[in-house]
Image 1 (cartoon, one colour):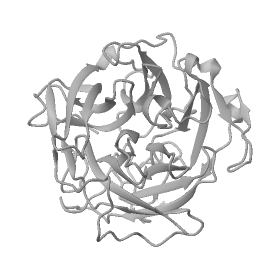
Image 2: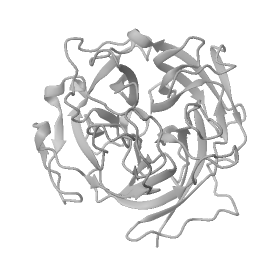
Image 3: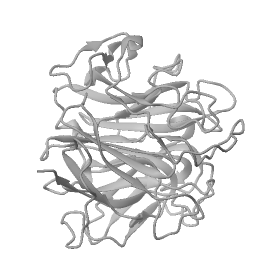
Image 4: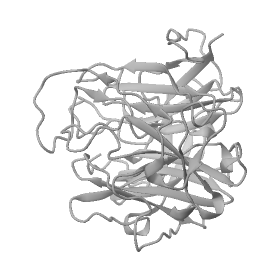
Length: 394
């Protein structure tokens, strides 16, 4: 997640190079993982990124707008432009299954997109995007430079498809580390499959965006849910937070953020170890918590939600019949300790853009990144997609 320039980032509009089978049909030789206890789905995810964007940056939360374009934001890079920003917004057209692939265009970056609330030692990160009623929304987080604290976040709005952005500059919408890693549920083009017309649903984490490698803040082990009317997305007072139990027959909401209840709790640790931890450590490969900044995508044909999470070394994918659960782990893909190779590697910031779902919603594309700042032996620091295939458990 540190500043890095791609050799070809100087292209204002860049093609994605494809080397993948279409996610619109299941390969004949696909091998699904064994069904995990209680899961309604099982999955098979590619061992590497197979659709690579000639771009620069990481994270890439996205949404599908009324002009049929995918809007996506990157951190620490030029995006599809030629100038480095800590945060940038881009417009992408086409599809990874098209003969001509995808084409990207830089729209805005840096101070034109958001501000830092927490002073020196912090930077801006994109964590989520929403497209609805022709308007774009971008969740922007303050993240400490060593990636180990996320104390504040706000949401910016664009009414001209990402060219200009506005937000309340007087105070962040979320602070004190509460619900400060925010991403919106992806309900398809223009939020079309949302369960409540006129509302957006969003997920959030407290404290940090993933495992705090030096334990300077608590590792996130709980996933929270909120909803907000579409005409008030940037008004913190209009947000309501889930306050029931996971999987309740009917949701319970509160306008008090301190009364929110998690919809998923998972305290598992991957790759346990006893190595010493140094203050400010930015990379870790032991005792990795599994709840991280990712994405939640609704699959209307399967009537299922998929939450794509990760640790530094694994993908952790969950499914649920409702936004508030019960969430069940259905795929845990371990890519092993570093170093990785270009033939098999995981990544962070996992999301599934709904624009690229197959017609039956059983094939899709997962975006993830590997930072050159990590001792992974390789990097994947661009808009990078890999196929994910799902099969209902009978």
